[in-house]
Length: 511
Image (cartoon, rainbow, N blue to C red):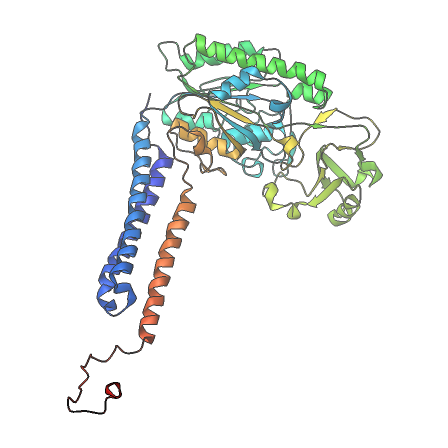
Protein backbone atom coordinates (compact mmCIF):
# COMPACT_ATOMS: atom_id res chain seq x y z
CA UNK A 1 0.00 0.00 0.00
CA UNK A 2 1.11 3.54 -0.72
CA UNK A 3 0.20 6.66 1.21
CA UNK A 4 -1.29 9.20 -1.19
CA UNK A 5 -2.46 12.75 -0.85
CA UNK A 6 -6.21 13.13 -1.16
CA UNK A 7 -6.08 15.77 -3.88
CA UNK A 8 -9.76 16.64 -3.98
CA UNK A 9 -10.04 17.21 -0.24
CA UNK A 10 -6.76 19.12 -0.23
CA UNK A 11 -8.04 21.45 -2.95
CA UNK A 12 -11.26 22.01 -1.02
CA UNK A 13 -9.29 22.90 2.12
CA UNK A 14 -7.12 25.37 0.20
CA UNK A 15 -10.21 27.08 -1.21
CA UNK A 16 -11.75 27.35 2.24
CA UNK A 17 -8.51 28.76 3.66
CA UNK A 18 -8.43 31.40 0.94
CA UNK A 19 -12.05 32.28 1.66
CA UNK A 20 -11.35 32.41 5.40
CA UNK A 21 -8.45 34.79 4.77
CA UNK A 22 -10.74 36.98 2.66
CA UNK A 23 -13.26 37.22 5.51
CA UNK A 24 -10.43 37.94 7.97
CA UNK A 25 -9.33 40.80 5.73
CA UNK A 26 -12.87 42.14 5.56
CA UNK A 27 -13.19 42.00 9.35
CA UNK A 28 -9.88 43.83 9.73
CA UNK A 29 -11.00 46.52 7.32
CA UNK A 30 -14.21 46.97 9.29
CA UNK A 31 -12.13 47.42 12.45
CA UNK A 32 -9.97 50.04 10.73
CA UNK A 33 -12.99 51.90 9.44
CA UNK A 34 -14.81 51.98 12.77
CA UNK A 35 -13.17 55.30 13.56
CA UNK A 36 -14.84 56.81 10.52
CA UNK A 37 -18.31 55.92 11.74
CA UNK A 38 -18.50 57.53 15.17
CA UNK A 39 -21.76 59.27 14.31
CA UNK A 40 -23.35 56.50 12.13
CA UNK A 41 -25.73 53.70 12.99
CA UNK A 42 -22.97 51.18 12.10
CA UNK A 43 -21.08 52.40 15.17
CA UNK A 44 -24.02 51.73 17.44
CA UNK A 45 -23.26 48.80 19.77
CA UNK A 46 -26.14 46.55 18.58
CA UNK A 47 -25.36 46.80 14.86
CA UNK A 48 -21.61 46.60 15.36
CA UNK A 49 -22.01 43.54 17.57
CA UNK A 50 -24.35 41.73 15.15
CA UNK A 51 -22.07 42.24 12.15
CA UNK A 52 -18.99 41.16 14.07
CA UNK A 53 -20.84 38.14 15.41
CA UNK A 54 -21.99 37.11 11.92
CA UNK A 55 -18.44 37.32 10.63
CA UNK A 56 -17.23 35.17 13.52
CA UNK A 57 -19.94 32.59 12.80
CA UNK A 58 -18.87 32.44 9.16
CA UNK A 59 -15.25 32.02 10.18
CA UNK A 60 -16.12 29.26 12.63
CA UNK A 61 -18.21 27.50 10.00
CA UNK A 62 -15.38 27.58 7.49
CA UNK A 63 -12.83 26.42 10.04
CA UNK A 64 -15.06 23.46 10.86
CA UNK A 65 -15.48 22.46 7.24
CA UNK A 66 -11.75 22.89 6.63
CA UNK A 67 -10.91 20.76 9.63
CA UNK A 68 -13.32 18.09 8.40
CA UNK A 69 -11.65 18.06 4.99
CA UNK A 70 -8.23 17.88 6.62
CA UNK A 71 -9.41 14.99 8.78
CA UNK A 72 -10.48 13.14 5.66
CA UNK A 73 -7.04 13.75 4.15
CA UNK A 74 -5.23 12.16 7.06
CA UNK A 75 -7.76 9.40 7.66
CA UNK A 76 -7.06 7.73 4.30
CA UNK A 77 -3.77 5.95 5.02
CA UNK A 78 -3.47 4.04 1.78
CA UNK A 79 -6.68 3.39 -0.14
CA UNK A 80 -8.45 0.04 -0.51
CA UNK A 81 -8.20 -1.70 -3.89
CA UNK A 82 -10.96 -0.94 -6.41
CA UNK A 83 -12.92 -3.29 -8.68
CA UNK A 84 -15.03 -1.91 -11.54
CA UNK A 85 -17.59 -4.31 -13.06
CA UNK A 86 -19.71 -3.61 -16.15
CA UNK A 87 -22.76 -5.59 -17.24
CA UNK A 88 -23.23 -4.38 -20.80
CA UNK A 89 -26.67 -3.01 -21.74
CA UNK A 90 -28.15 -3.00 -18.21
CA UNK A 91 -30.98 -0.50 -18.50
CA UNK A 92 -31.62 1.37 -15.25
CA UNK A 93 -35.27 0.40 -14.87
CA UNK A 94 -34.45 -3.32 -15.04
CA UNK A 95 -33.82 -2.94 -11.31
CA UNK A 96 -37.51 -2.19 -10.78
CA UNK A 97 -38.92 -4.48 -13.46
CA UNK A 98 -37.12 -7.70 -12.56
CA UNK A 99 -36.13 -9.42 -9.29
CA UNK A 100 -32.43 -8.84 -8.60
CA UNK A 101 -31.86 -10.14 -5.04
CA UNK A 102 -28.06 -10.34 -5.19
CA UNK A 103 -27.62 -6.93 -6.76
CA UNK A 104 -30.03 -5.41 -4.24
CA UNK A 105 -28.10 -7.09 -1.43
CA UNK A 106 -24.94 -5.46 -2.76
CA UNK A 107 -26.27 -1.91 -2.89
CA UNK A 108 -28.27 -2.27 0.34
CA UNK A 109 -24.86 -2.57 1.98
CA UNK A 110 -23.61 0.38 -0.04
CA UNK A 111 -25.01 2.96 -2.43
CA UNK A 112 -27.23 3.10 -5.51
CA UNK A 113 -27.39 5.71 -8.26
CA UNK A 114 -30.75 5.04 -9.88
CA UNK A 115 -29.80 6.49 -13.28
CA UNK A 116 -26.51 7.42 -14.90
CA UNK A 117 -26.63 9.98 -17.68
CA UNK A 118 -24.18 8.44 -20.10
CA UNK A 119 -22.39 9.99 -23.08
CA UNK A 120 -23.63 10.35 -26.64
CA UNK A 121 -23.62 8.22 -28.67
CA UNK A 122 -24.99 5.64 -26.28
CA UNK A 123 -22.94 2.78 -27.69
CA UNK A 124 -20.70 0.23 -25.96
CA UNK A 125 -17.22 1.38 -26.96
CA UNK A 126 -17.70 5.15 -26.47
CA UNK A 127 -19.29 4.70 -23.05
CA UNK A 128 -16.88 2.10 -21.73
CA UNK A 129 -14.00 4.38 -22.62
CA UNK A 130 -15.76 7.33 -20.98
CA UNK A 131 -16.09 5.33 -17.76
CA UNK A 132 -12.31 4.85 -17.53
CA UNK A 133 -11.25 8.30 -18.82
CA UNK A 134 -14.00 10.65 -17.58
CA UNK A 135 -14.24 12.19 -21.06
CA UNK A 136 -17.02 12.77 -23.55
CA UNK A 137 -16.70 10.84 -26.80
CA UNK A 138 -15.61 13.93 -28.73
CA UNK A 139 -12.68 14.24 -26.31
CA UNK A 140 -11.47 10.62 -26.10
CA UNK A 141 -12.00 9.89 -29.79
CA UNK A 142 -13.92 6.60 -29.59
CA UNK A 143 -17.04 8.02 -31.21
CA UNK A 144 -18.98 4.99 -32.43
CA UNK A 145 -18.82 1.31 -33.30
CA UNK A 146 -17.80 2.26 -36.85
CA UNK A 147 -15.56 5.25 -37.61
CA UNK A 148 -13.52 6.83 -40.36
CA UNK A 149 -10.45 8.95 -39.68
CA UNK A 150 -9.99 11.62 -42.41
CA UNK A 151 -6.32 12.18 -41.53
CA UNK A 152 -5.06 8.60 -41.63
CA UNK A 153 -7.91 7.39 -43.93
CA UNK A 154 -8.31 4.39 -41.63
CA UNK A 155 -11.57 2.64 -40.77
CA UNK A 156 -12.53 1.39 -37.30
CA UNK A 157 -15.11 -1.27 -36.56
CA UNK A 158 -15.75 -3.93 -33.94
CA UNK A 159 -13.28 -6.71 -34.61
CA UNK A 160 -10.72 -4.27 -36.03
CA UNK A 161 -10.20 -2.09 -32.99
CA UNK A 162 -6.69 -2.63 -31.64
CA UNK A 163 -4.81 0.08 -33.54
CA UNK A 164 -3.49 2.43 -30.80
CA UNK A 165 -4.16 5.42 -33.06
CA UNK A 166 -7.87 5.26 -32.24
CA UNK A 167 -7.42 5.07 -28.46
CA UNK A 168 -4.44 7.29 -27.74
CA UNK A 169 -6.38 10.56 -27.45
CA UNK A 170 -7.12 9.68 -23.80
CA UNK A 171 -5.32 7.77 -21.04
CA UNK A 172 -7.40 5.10 -19.25
CA UNK A 173 -7.25 4.75 -15.50
CA UNK A 174 -5.45 1.39 -15.64
CA UNK A 175 -2.48 3.23 -17.19
CA UNK A 176 -2.78 6.35 -15.00
CA UNK A 177 -2.68 4.22 -11.83
CA UNK A 178 0.62 2.68 -12.96
CA UNK A 179 2.23 6.08 -12.42
CA UNK A 180 1.25 5.89 -8.75
CA UNK A 181 3.15 2.63 -8.34
CA UNK A 182 0.08 0.41 -8.52
CA UNK A 183 -0.47 -2.85 -10.35
CA UNK A 184 -3.62 -2.79 -12.50
CA UNK A 185 -5.79 -5.30 -14.34
CA UNK A 186 -8.43 -5.28 -17.09
CA UNK A 187 -10.51 -8.29 -18.06
CA UNK A 188 -11.89 -7.92 -21.61
CA UNK A 189 -12.77 -4.25 -21.10
CA UNK A 190 -13.05 -2.44 -24.45
CA UNK A 191 -9.65 -1.01 -25.33
CA UNK A 192 -7.75 -2.77 -22.54
CA UNK A 193 -5.56 -4.84 -24.86
CA UNK A 194 -4.47 -1.72 -26.76
CA UNK A 195 -1.10 -0.20 -25.88
CA UNK A 196 -1.25 3.39 -24.69
CA UNK A 197 2.16 4.88 -25.49
CA UNK A 198 3.59 1.38 -25.26
CA UNK A 199 1.89 0.64 -21.93
CA UNK A 200 -1.02 -1.57 -20.92
CA UNK A 201 -2.52 -2.68 -17.62
CA UNK A 202 -0.23 -4.99 -15.64
CA UNK A 203 -2.62 -7.86 -16.36
CA UNK A 204 -5.18 -8.05 -19.16
CA UNK A 205 -7.00 -10.48 -21.44
CA UNK A 206 -8.58 -9.52 -24.78
CA UNK A 207 -12.27 -10.14 -25.39
CA UNK A 208 -13.33 -13.74 -25.90
CA UNK A 209 -17.03 -14.53 -25.68
CA UNK A 210 -16.30 -18.19 -24.94
CA UNK A 211 -14.73 -17.34 -21.57
CA UNK A 212 -17.38 -17.66 -18.84
CA UNK A 213 -18.09 -15.06 -16.19
CA UNK A 214 -16.75 -17.42 -13.51
CA UNK A 215 -13.47 -17.82 -15.39
CA UNK A 216 -13.11 -14.08 -15.90
CA UNK A 217 -13.87 -13.43 -12.23
CA UNK A 218 -11.35 -16.06 -11.12
CA UNK A 219 -8.58 -14.34 -13.04
CA UNK A 220 -9.53 -10.94 -11.64
CA UNK A 221 -9.55 -12.09 -8.00
CA UNK A 222 -6.17 -13.80 -8.49
CA UNK A 223 -4.73 -10.61 -9.96
CA UNK A 224 -6.07 -8.57 -7.04
CA UNK A 225 -4.74 -11.00 -4.44
CA UNK A 226 -1.24 -11.16 -5.89
CA UNK A 227 0.96 -14.24 -5.64
CA UNK A 228 2.95 -13.38 -2.52
CA UNK A 229 5.91 -12.24 -4.56
CA UNK A 230 4.10 -9.57 -6.54
CA UNK A 231 1.75 -6.93 -5.18
CA UNK A 232 -1.91 -7.48 -6.02
CA UNK A 233 -3.66 -5.19 -8.47
CA UNK A 234 -5.01 -2.02 -6.83
CA UNK A 235 -7.39 -1.43 -9.73
CA UNK A 236 -9.22 -4.01 -11.83
CA UNK A 237 -11.95 -3.75 -14.47
CA UNK A 238 -14.22 -6.66 -15.45
CA UNK A 239 -16.57 -6.75 -18.46
CA UNK A 240 -19.57 -9.05 -19.12
CA UNK A 241 -21.68 -8.85 -22.30
CA UNK A 242 -25.11 -9.54 -20.82
CA UNK A 243 -27.88 -8.36 -20.72
CA UNK A 244 -26.88 -6.44 -23.90
CA UNK A 245 -26.83 -9.53 -26.10
CA UNK A 246 -30.30 -10.64 -25.01
CA UNK A 247 -31.62 -7.08 -25.26
CA UNK A 248 -30.59 -6.89 -28.91
CA UNK A 249 -32.00 -10.30 -29.69
CA UNK A 250 -35.38 -10.07 -27.96
CA UNK A 251 -35.89 -6.40 -27.12
CA UNK A 252 -36.25 -4.99 -23.60
CA UNK A 253 -40.04 -5.33 -23.66
CA UNK A 254 -39.88 -9.13 -23.96
CA UNK A 255 -40.43 -9.85 -20.29
CA UNK A 256 -39.92 -13.61 -20.53
CA UNK A 257 -36.58 -13.46 -22.36
CA UNK A 258 -35.21 -10.53 -20.38
CA UNK A 259 -36.26 -12.10 -17.07
CA UNK A 260 -34.12 -15.12 -17.95
CA UNK A 261 -31.17 -12.96 -19.03
CA UNK A 262 -31.32 -10.81 -15.91
CA UNK A 263 -31.55 -13.82 -13.63
CA UNK A 264 -28.23 -14.93 -15.15
CA UNK A 265 -26.79 -11.46 -14.52
CA UNK A 266 -27.99 -11.48 -10.91
CA UNK A 267 -26.59 -14.98 -10.42
CA UNK A 268 -23.24 -13.63 -11.62
CA UNK A 269 -23.48 -10.81 -9.07
CA UNK A 270 -24.09 -13.49 -6.43
CA UNK A 271 -21.04 -15.36 -7.72
CA UNK A 272 -19.03 -12.12 -7.48
CA UNK A 273 -20.05 -11.62 -3.84
CA UNK A 274 -19.35 -15.23 -2.84
CA UNK A 275 -15.96 -15.29 -4.61
CA UNK A 276 -14.87 -12.06 -2.94
CA UNK A 277 -15.94 -13.46 0.43
CA UNK A 278 -14.13 -16.74 -0.22
CA UNK A 279 -10.89 -14.95 -1.06
CA UNK A 280 -11.18 -12.49 1.83
CA UNK A 281 -11.55 -9.48 -0.49
CA UNK A 282 -15.15 -8.71 0.44
CA UNK A 283 -15.23 -5.78 2.86
CA UNK A 284 -11.59 -4.95 2.07
CA UNK A 285 -12.05 -3.57 -1.44
CA UNK A 286 -14.36 -1.03 -3.03
CA UNK A 287 -16.65 -2.39 -5.76
CA UNK A 288 -18.45 -0.44 -8.48
CA UNK A 289 -21.08 -2.30 -10.52
CA UNK A 290 -22.41 -0.37 -13.48
CA UNK A 291 -23.17 -0.44 -17.20
CA UNK A 292 -22.60 1.53 -20.39
CA UNK A 293 -26.11 2.12 -21.73
CA UNK A 294 -29.71 0.95 -21.74
CA UNK A 295 -31.87 -0.49 -24.49
CA UNK A 296 -34.93 0.55 -26.55
CA UNK A 297 -37.55 -1.66 -28.19
CA UNK A 298 -37.51 -1.57 -32.00
CA UNK A 299 -40.08 -2.65 -34.57
CA UNK A 300 -40.32 -3.34 -38.30
CA UNK A 301 -43.10 -0.74 -38.30
CA UNK A 302 -40.54 1.92 -37.34
CA UNK A 303 -38.03 1.87 -40.19
CA UNK A 304 -36.41 4.92 -41.84
CA UNK A 305 -35.17 4.10 -45.37
CA UNK A 306 -32.43 6.35 -46.68
CA UNK A 307 -33.05 5.24 -50.28
CA UNK A 308 -36.48 6.89 -50.02
CA UNK A 309 -34.70 10.22 -49.60
CA UNK A 310 -31.67 10.19 -51.88
CA UNK A 311 -29.64 7.88 -54.09
CA UNK A 312 -26.76 6.10 -52.33
CA UNK A 313 -24.34 7.47 -54.94
CA UNK A 314 -24.62 10.82 -53.15
CA UNK A 315 -22.81 9.73 -49.98
CA UNK A 316 -20.43 7.31 -48.32
CA UNK A 317 -21.92 5.59 -45.28
CA UNK A 318 -19.67 5.30 -42.22
CA UNK A 319 -22.19 4.19 -39.57
CA UNK A 320 -25.90 3.44 -39.90
CA UNK A 321 -28.21 3.19 -36.90
CA UNK A 322 -29.56 4.69 -34.74
CA UNK A 323 -27.01 7.44 -35.45
CA UNK A 324 -25.97 7.43 -39.09
CA UNK A 325 -22.71 9.10 -40.13
CA UNK A 326 -22.39 10.17 -43.78
CA UNK A 327 -19.72 11.68 -45.97
CA UNK A 328 -21.40 13.59 -48.85
CA UNK A 329 -19.86 12.99 -52.27
CA UNK A 330 -21.43 16.08 -53.78
CA UNK A 331 -22.59 19.40 -52.36
CA UNK A 332 -22.97 18.78 -48.57
CA UNK A 333 -25.73 21.41 -48.27
CA UNK A 334 -27.77 19.80 -51.05
CA UNK A 335 -27.39 16.32 -49.53
CA UNK A 336 -28.29 17.71 -46.12
CA UNK A 337 -31.41 19.43 -47.52
CA UNK A 338 -32.72 16.09 -48.83
CA UNK A 339 -31.95 14.24 -45.60
CA UNK A 340 -33.51 16.97 -43.48
CA UNK A 341 -36.87 16.31 -45.12
CA UNK A 342 -36.42 12.54 -45.17
CA UNK A 343 -38.47 11.39 -42.17
CA UNK A 344 -40.19 13.12 -39.25
CA UNK A 345 -38.69 10.53 -36.89
CA UNK A 346 -35.10 11.35 -37.83
CA UNK A 347 -33.16 14.56 -37.22
CA UNK A 348 -30.36 15.55 -39.60
CA UNK A 349 -27.47 17.74 -38.45
CA UNK A 350 -24.58 19.34 -40.23
CA UNK A 351 -21.53 18.82 -38.05
CA UNK A 352 -21.29 22.51 -37.15
CA UNK A 353 -24.92 22.50 -35.91
CA UNK A 354 -24.82 19.44 -33.64
CA UNK A 355 -26.24 20.60 -30.26
CA UNK A 356 -23.68 21.52 -27.60
CA UNK A 357 -25.41 19.33 -25.01
CA UNK A 358 -24.43 16.20 -26.97
CA UNK A 359 -20.69 17.02 -26.73
CA UNK A 360 -20.35 15.46 -30.15
CA UNK A 361 -18.89 18.03 -32.52
CA UNK A 362 -15.25 18.77 -31.73
CA UNK A 363 -13.45 15.85 -33.29
CA UNK A 364 -12.14 15.20 -36.81
CA UNK A 365 -13.70 11.73 -36.80
CA UNK A 366 -17.24 13.13 -36.56
CA UNK A 367 -18.51 13.22 -40.12
CA UNK A 368 -20.01 16.17 -41.99
CA UNK A 369 -23.60 14.93 -41.59
CA UNK A 370 -25.12 12.81 -38.82
CA UNK A 371 -28.69 11.50 -38.61
CA UNK A 372 -30.26 10.72 -35.22
CA UNK A 373 -33.29 8.43 -35.14
CA UNK A 374 -36.06 8.92 -32.60
CA UNK A 375 -36.27 6.41 -29.76
CA UNK A 376 -37.19 2.96 -31.08
CA UNK A 377 -36.77 3.89 -34.75
CA UNK A 378 -34.19 2.17 -36.98
CA UNK A 379 -32.29 3.65 -39.92
CA UNK A 380 -31.73 1.31 -42.86
CA UNK A 381 -30.62 1.98 -46.39
CA UNK A 382 -33.40 -0.01 -48.02
CA UNK A 383 -35.83 -2.89 -47.55
CA UNK A 384 -38.12 -3.95 -44.72
CA UNK A 385 -35.80 -6.08 -42.60
CA UNK A 386 -35.34 -5.06 -38.97
CA UNK A 387 -31.74 -5.80 -37.97
CA UNK A 388 -32.50 -6.22 -34.24
CA UNK A 389 -35.45 -6.05 -31.85
CA UNK A 390 -33.57 -3.99 -29.29
CA UNK A 391 -31.06 -1.22 -29.89
CA UNK A 392 -29.16 1.63 -28.26
CA UNK A 393 -27.14 4.61 -29.40
CA UNK A 394 -30.03 7.07 -29.20
CA UNK A 395 -30.07 10.50 -27.56
CA UNK A 396 -28.47 10.24 -24.11
CA UNK A 397 -31.25 12.33 -22.54
CA UNK A 398 -33.65 9.36 -22.92
CA UNK A 399 -34.17 7.37 -19.72
CA UNK A 400 -34.27 4.15 -21.76
CA UNK A 401 -30.61 4.77 -22.62
CA UNK A 402 -29.52 5.26 -19.01
CA UNK A 403 -27.67 2.62 -16.98
CA UNK A 404 -27.23 2.55 -13.18
CA UNK A 405 -24.45 2.46 -10.61
CA UNK A 406 -24.24 0.34 -7.46
CA UNK A 407 -21.25 0.40 -5.12
CA UNK A 408 -20.14 -1.05 -1.82
CA UNK A 409 -17.00 -1.27 0.24
CA UNK A 410 -15.21 0.44 3.13
CA UNK A 411 -15.29 3.87 1.44
CA UNK A 412 -19.02 3.95 0.67
CA UNK A 413 -22.04 4.85 2.73
CA UNK A 414 -24.52 2.17 3.72
CA UNK A 415 -28.03 1.90 2.27
CA UNK A 416 -27.76 5.28 0.53
CA UNK A 417 -29.39 6.30 -2.77
CA UNK A 418 -29.31 9.25 -5.14
CA UNK A 419 -31.42 9.67 -8.24
CA UNK A 420 -28.81 10.53 -10.86
CA UNK A 421 -25.18 11.13 -11.71
CA UNK A 422 -23.17 11.82 -14.86
CA UNK A 423 -21.23 8.78 -16.06
CA UNK A 424 -18.14 10.98 -16.61
CA UNK A 425 -18.17 11.60 -12.84
CA UNK A 426 -17.24 7.97 -12.17
CA UNK A 427 -13.66 8.49 -13.35
CA UNK A 428 -12.80 11.30 -10.87
CA UNK A 429 -14.57 9.26 -8.19
CA UNK A 430 -12.34 6.26 -8.91
CA UNK A 431 -9.21 8.41 -8.96
CA UNK A 432 -10.28 9.86 -5.60
CA UNK A 433 -10.86 6.37 -4.17
CA UNK A 434 -7.39 5.30 -5.30
CA UNK A 435 -5.72 8.62 -4.39
CA UNK A 436 -4.49 8.79 -7.97
CA UNK A 437 -4.04 12.21 -9.61
CA UNK A 438 -6.64 12.30 -12.41
CA UNK A 439 -5.93 13.18 -16.00
CA UNK A 440 -7.90 16.16 -17.42
CA UNK A 441 -11.52 15.06 -17.65
CA UNK A 442 -15.12 16.25 -18.04
CA UNK A 443 -16.32 14.90 -14.69
CA UNK A 444 -16.62 16.37 -11.21
CA UNK A 445 -16.63 15.10 -7.63
CA UNK A 446 -19.26 17.62 -6.45
CA UNK A 447 -22.10 15.10 -6.36
CA UNK A 448 -20.19 11.82 -6.42
CA UNK A 449 -18.45 12.58 -3.11
CA UNK A 450 -21.86 12.33 -1.40
CA UNK A 451 -21.64 8.56 -1.94
CA UNK A 452 -18.60 8.30 0.32
CA UNK A 453 -18.70 7.70 4.03
CA UNK A 454 -15.76 9.94 4.92
CA UNK A 455 -16.79 12.88 2.75
CA UNK A 456 -19.00 15.87 3.35
CA UNK A 457 -21.43 16.85 0.62
CA UNK A 458 -20.58 20.53 0.63
CA UNK A 459 -20.90 22.06 -2.77
CA UNK A 460 -17.83 24.29 -2.47
CA UNK A 461 -18.71 26.73 -5.30
CA UNK A 462 -22.23 27.14 -3.89
CA UNK A 463 -20.91 27.59 -0.36
CA UNK A 464 -18.45 30.24 -1.52
CA UNK A 465 -21.25 32.01 -3.37
CA UNK A 466 -23.43 32.03 -0.25
CA UNK A 467 -20.67 33.42 1.97
CA UNK A 468 -19.71 36.07 -0.59
CA UNK A 469 -23.41 36.93 -0.86
CA UNK A 470 -23.60 37.49 2.90
CA UNK A 471 -20.53 39.72 2.76
CA UNK A 472 -22.06 41.74 -0.06
CA UNK A 473 -25.23 42.23 1.99
CA UNK A 474 -23.15 43.42 4.95
CA UNK A 475 -21.26 45.84 2.72
CA UNK A 476 -24.51 47.15 1.22
CA UNK A 477 -26.01 47.72 4.67
CA UNK A 478 -22.88 49.57 5.74
CA UNK A 479 -22.99 51.85 2.70
CA UNK A 480 -26.70 52.55 3.25
CA UNK A 481 -26.08 53.46 6.88
CA UNK A 482 -23.34 55.85 5.83
CA UNK A 483 -25.62 57.53 3.30
CA UNK A 484 -28.41 57.83 5.86
CA UNK A 485 -26.04 59.27 8.43
CA UNK A 486 -25.01 62.08 6.05
CA UNK A 487 -28.67 62.99 5.47
CA UNK A 488 -29.63 63.12 9.16
CA UNK A 489 -30.50 66.57 10.55
CA UNK A 490 -27.97 68.11 12.92
CA UNK A 491 -28.11 66.89 16.49
CA UNK A 492 -30.67 68.36 19.02
CA UNK A 493 -29.97 71.71 20.64
CA UNK A 494 -28.45 71.47 24.10
CA UNK A 495 -30.99 71.19 26.90
CA UNK A 496 -31.85 74.53 28.57
CA UNK A 497 -33.90 74.94 31.68
CA UNK A 498 -37.00 77.12 31.21
CA UNK A 499 -36.73 80.34 33.23
CA UNK A 500 -39.97 81.28 35.06
CA UNK A 501 -40.59 84.67 36.68
CA UNK A 502 -41.71 84.02 40.26
CA UNK A 503 -43.54 87.37 40.36
CA UNK A 504 -45.76 86.56 37.40
CA UNK A 505 -49.35 86.67 38.72
CA UNK A 506 -50.98 86.06 35.36
CA UNK A 507 -50.92 82.27 35.55
CA UNK A 508 -54.43 81.21 34.36
CA UNK A 509 -54.39 78.11 36.53
CA UNK A 510 -54.58 80.32 39.59
CA UNK A 511 -57.75 81.98 38.52
